[in-house]
Length: 83
Image (cartoon, rainbow, N blue to C red; front, top):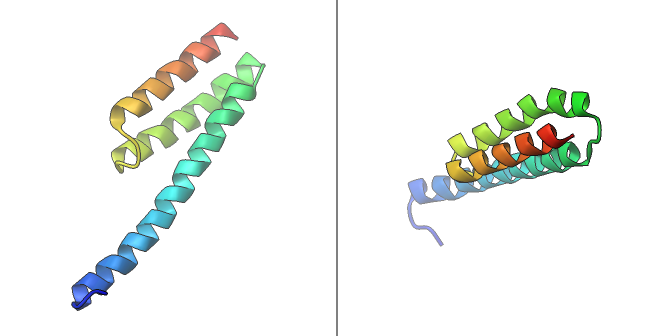
């Protein structure tokens, strides 16, 4: 158990950040799945900017690596191009 007030605060803040990061990461994964299930090119092109933005935000907060975000965005844009 932590012995300092600052350590106790760090435990609390880490937990709240973990929950928020988990929520945002799961939401982004669901958005990617939703985009990959689309068959209409117009709908996919409309949804792509928001998914791309979500990935950028995760990368900026170091929830996922920047290269992973870039790879996912590249793969999604290729998918949309094939529709």
